[in-house]
Length: 274
Length: 275
Image (cartoon, rainbow over all chains, first blue to last red; front, side, top):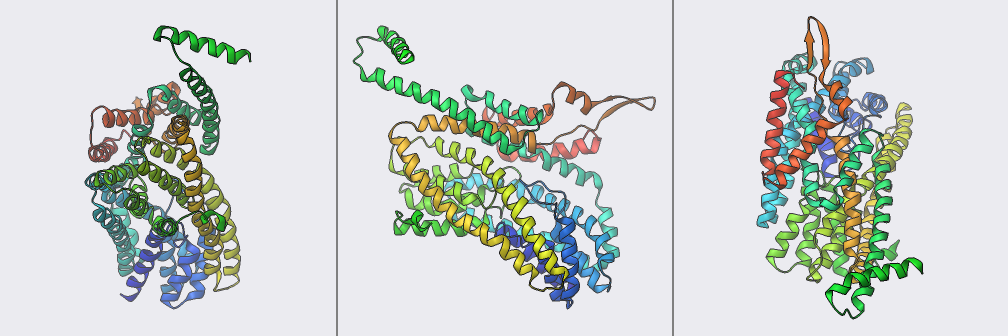
């Protein structure tokens, strides 16, 4: 029972904690390993396995919400099982990889199905100016999300490693798969909301340009940003020139509306040749 | 570096500190549809309350700041600083184009996410982890602490000074542009970068592949995804995004329904084996 609590609290405070203390890397194997070791009375094993798992999970990062596994839960459970069964990396490794993948799926499930629907609740609170509500929901969702997530290591520890593997196989694959698909499609809603902000008929072509160069030229986002900036600078320069012309035109006394266009054209010619 | 905060009033320095602490929680309630919107709002609330006097203006600013936000966490305070300085200018003048705030914010987050992810995830973390792993393998108990310090000291410096830099830059340059009437040009330019990034992110982040194949007599005669790719790569994610956009803008469908609909349809499609 103590072990179950200890591991669950470690997962809550590190994997959850790094969402509260953003970008602090608390949930990496190299941190979790020794921490679990400390609580279960074998820091050395924890440290060793933590370091090995860090090497393995090194490539797994969480960029833009996309990832291949959740290393935190995997490390906590793998280290705990290894210490309790007095095994080393040999016990930890075969457990860590599937646990990491399943951990990510459950994390995604909570993220999509539990936290996801609250996005519109935040909007309606903002519309009502309900600041307290927003703050409460902001932290409430964090607590709920990571409490739910910490139940997994708690029960996994309570029932042991064999039972854990059996239960993991029971979740209908098709539901997990469907939610994974949903998780991949849902950014579309976010993109649509951004488009609602930015969309303007005159510049809408750039949306498709952005899509095209990633889909076909496989350009990394940073290159798209640079390219976009170059285009934006060119457009802004042209606009700035037009702005200057308009300023000159409006500064001149204009006789009548009909001659207005003419003046503009003349002005343009003047500038062109000067 | 202390020059950055030289021109700030005592109140502004306090706001900067609040922003620094609050922005830690950017992704505490991260949702698939709006990512760190609630965390961004939470970080902006002190500014909104300080700058706006009328309740109506506060609400408008709150709605504005609850929009989709996703960037690298170390870079977020910089964007927040710029956004906050624009909210300040918006509160001080009557004809400030409030839409430019979101345009600038959106155009900043994409490039900064790219820069931040590659510097902090790709370089700094790998260096920190590499050093810590070798220490740990030699049995050094301090390894995790050294890992955290090596990573977090640079990140926190960037977060702290980035916020102030953003606020100062925003106050100086955006204010000047505004006075000259050039903010519309900047907004348009920023919107171009923003839209291009959104297009790129659509291609990068929205994934939807068909698994359905037509099999006749044990032979696969048609692979639907392959066929679609020949027509146009990413035609389905693009269509889905445009459909969502159309439903949001023209049909005023609430985000709630869009999210729920996406989840239900995805599961149904998975059940029938199309995806």
